[in-house]
Length: 384
Image (cartoon, rainbow, N blue to C red; front, side, top):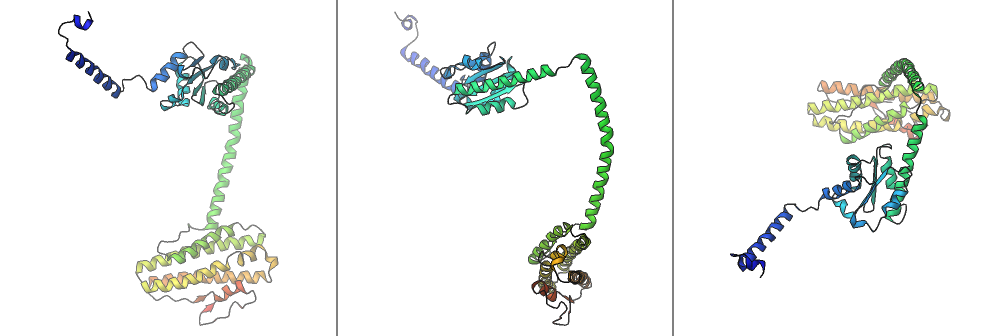
């Protein structure tokens, strides 16, 4: 007689109900994550496998790696090895697993393979040194076992070298005290020497910064109210400051170059301020007139101060006839133009029409024709 027949009250319908309940319970457990396949399973298995043993290989990859051959490559006899299948990478990475196994097992150096990915963690080497060795070993042979042998051997050798060096460097107690004493004395002397040097360095830095401030002048910014084409030219002009600041030879040119840096700064700052005040006054016609005039004048300033004329006169005067005279004409013209910007700003403040008394036409022609007269005035303006 079957067991089901021996127990009263159980019918065929009841058996089917019990079976259905078991299926529902199994599905519920699977959906709720009660299945044992999780990241902890691989970690727990590895921790358990390395408890009291230096090598452990997951049953899923046992045929791929002979752990005894791998461990035999370790000259230090202190490296532990754990090998997991590639599916473990979905739950835990090789680097994280190596660090976790070193922290939770008795081994201070652990080499881990997750699939073909090899990682390592060691308390006996410098930070990431074991990981670097393991990464280099990943492509050392055609098999995972060969790569592990290379990694374990290299890490074991590094550990042995570290221990030998530490043992050789370990001093006796008396010599150690004497060495520490002289080390303290050396540090005190070094500090006493560095303090005055640091003070001198700070003083020199302050002097250089102040000198640089004097050369460059105030901060140079192009105002947002400046018309785009004029603003673009002012940016080019501002960039020329660095070229003039770099002038070192001949010595006579350094002073002229420094003065030109200040002149360029004045032009950029004052032109920006002029258009800012024009915008605040709301004079649309005046802004249009100023835009046309300053676009023309600033473009000529950029041309004459560029590498082909004034800058070349300063740095290569031997290549020019009358370089002193030519340079003076440029400097006078730039000074006159800078002063005109101030006068135009005063006219804006007084709500007067802008008057442009300086023309740079002849100066611009001088950059194209070295024999042109620089003071041929085509109209009533004073040309410079």
